[in-house]
Amino acid sequence: MYASTELFGRIQVSGTPLATAVGSLRRQPLNHLQAICSRKFPEGWDRLNQTKANSRERIYTPQATALAFLSQILNPGRSCREAVRQVQAAYALLPGAPAVGVDTSPYCRARARLEIDRLRTVNHHMASRMEAGVAQGTVPWSRPVKVVDGTCLNLPDTPENRAAFPQAAGQRRGCGFPIMRMVGMFSLQTGACLAHAEAAYRVGEGALFRQLWASMRPGDIALGDRLFEAYGNLAGLLQRGVDSVYRINAHRPADFRRGRALGRLDRLLTLPRPARPAAGWKRKKWKSLPGQITVRQIRARIQEPNCRVHTVTLITTLVDPDLWPSELIVEMYRRRWQVELFLDDIKTTLQMDRLSCQSPGMVLKEIEMHMVAYNLVRALMQEASIRHDVPLARISFKGTLDTVQQYSQAMARIPARQSGKRRALYLQMLQTIAKDLLPVRPGRREPRCVKRRPKAYPLMTRPRRLMRDPPKSFRRTAKKSA
Image (cartoon, rainbow, N blue to C red; front, side):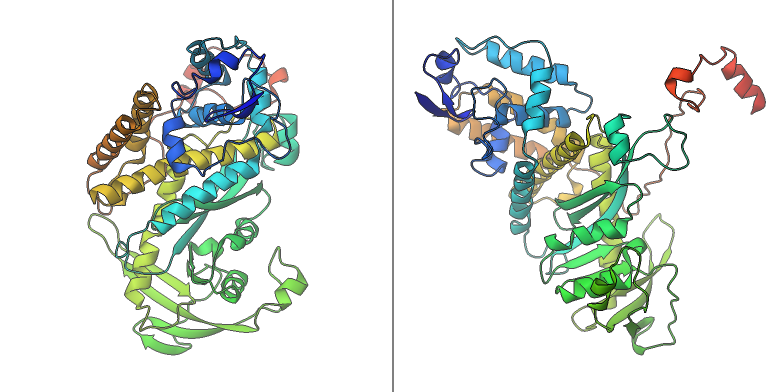
């Protein structure tokens, strides 16, 4: 006999140790995040996968595993042992449930069975709903703006990770860590992560950016820094109906004596296609680009209170000065800095800077789960912003994360049949998120430096098996040499 439950999907119940617990699952969730995720994740995301990898009766079902994995991401530093203890404690509350072993191996194998495509579907669903919920008038432009930027991540030093993502060339073998390069594409309006691409460190950000073109739609605007300003990106996206705004590359001369004047320091130029294909482009694909394109070149001063004055030169395919005044384009680029804060929320607050999985396949799933956690928090921030009419940019990401952690545990103690009470607590959570606003900080600087001094230990210059303990007088020696 089979039964369908909210948590497990379709499982066999007759004659199994889980038979008595099935009736309790509707009243007692296995994970405190279940009530929050059920409102944001697509319907049926927890059903059995098509490959039947989880078709047998399992303690670590797809939903239980995914929620435990998500709980690890939302609580940086939480180990697999703690996730297993969480599942053990939840099962202990269910009458007749089987005993859960203390070993972490079954949970790790269950994480490996998670389908990465299913996680991407969850991300796409949340990002699409956030884009559809953007209120008119919140930004001075009507078209979707998708901002891109790149970053690097550190992976555990395992043979599998080293083979797929080699360490930097300047590091000695066995003394560094595998490095992954990642390019993310975010919505400038909502902050949602729309798509991302990863590869080894030797792969450039331009090549990874081209992998994200499939996620763009005609009418979108691509916004990026000078690293993405290249003829291939300008012309290739224009062929797809996507406009671009970039800071001009340092290798391109910014001559305001050429072209047709549209205003002060605003020129209309014609860029010819270079004869030689750019790095990473195949000759046939390069030849399919138009022979020349028309762009605008704009120079402006970005001045904010308590901040130094910047002079930037932009290049864009938004060539109509009536629809797109130069001030509007400059304002769009001024907000490009938001993507640095989006990546900071993921890498610092959620601690994706240093991943923990031991194999390349699991590393990719860990990154995807980080994006699920990030988009989940951003979706709650947007809902609180719309419901209580507060600026989304002033809602704290870390404050929202802390609020979700506490309120989700309180919601888990309310039986599922008391939906009204759960709904009231959910609305109170949104109100709490909306009240916890960041102060207005115009021109606030975000220096790329650390304040806390590291320990004065020497760097590892040889593999661990060849290292000896450094002399105890190292700290005194280092002070004298300084």
